[in-house]
Amino acid sequence: MFRIPSFIHIYGKGIITNPDLERVSSYLKTLLPESTIDVRTDFISFFLGQLDSSKTDDTVDLLAGKLASIRVLDYSKHKLNPDPLYAEIDYERRKMLNPATKSIGVFYDGFELQNVYHSLMYRNFNPRFFGLRPQNDNQQQKCHSERSEESNSIERSEHSFAHSHIVFTNQLITTWEDDDSRYHARSSAYGFPSIISTAGIVEAPAKPREFYLMKQQYGMMGMDDLALAEFKNKFEGRFIEYNDPRMTEVCKGYTAQALFFHITGEPFCEDKGCRLFNAHWQAELIYSQLESPYEFCEKHANILHNL
Ligand SMILES: [Zn+2]
Image (cartoon, rainbow, N blue to C red):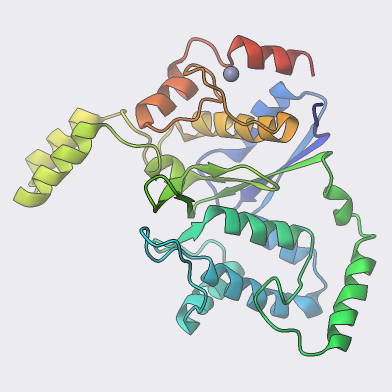
């Protein structure tokens, strides 16, 4: 059974300048003309803005602690950062209060980040979720009754399959792979909400093998201006870079994947020319999103046509 969203909410306005989120939104409208689509500010600011101002400070503190604790410090260890340093928490707090702050190479566990976003969306500010012990039962009870009051709010109605939430972030997300026992950078994590990482689109799908070889060679010998120009020339256009003009087109495909996850539970397709192809190489990404002669394979084009 298909779950067709009547509303699609895209988050990232004000933070994400590439892709052009308005164009991504217009594209989704062509896929689901009956749905209402809006582009909202960055996810955390949007939901903090819904809170009673008396709760904002506490929530920012709780969220800052939680975000700092889901950082991946070492790619090779299946362990996060359960006891974050004050500076790490403070960084998160400052970033939340001023979301345009530049990120400084921090990586998060993608599914844990999804849990944090999910919790924020549901306003489930249960201290236990954030790894804190409630001060006493009365307080816990109060939290509980406050939550049931909130459950009547308009925003609460957005927590159903009628609403699809797609979060754009410029932070890097990673997921743990048992196969080679390490964390891998990801372009996206589909769920409720779905997260699309623009940094992940640049970093996660692998670049041509020669790129790494040449980089290693130049790394050993040092790279002068001529070598740098040659290097850039050789690989020009072969992978998506930060501020790449093709980012909007690529992100249309990632939002289509998020949409298919919402509708069918399966975001990906085996067909290398379909926008739903799960690209592991930049060359595959560029082919599926930019060069393929068709947008969706027959199966997925049919699903869209018959919704
Ligand atoms: Zn397909």
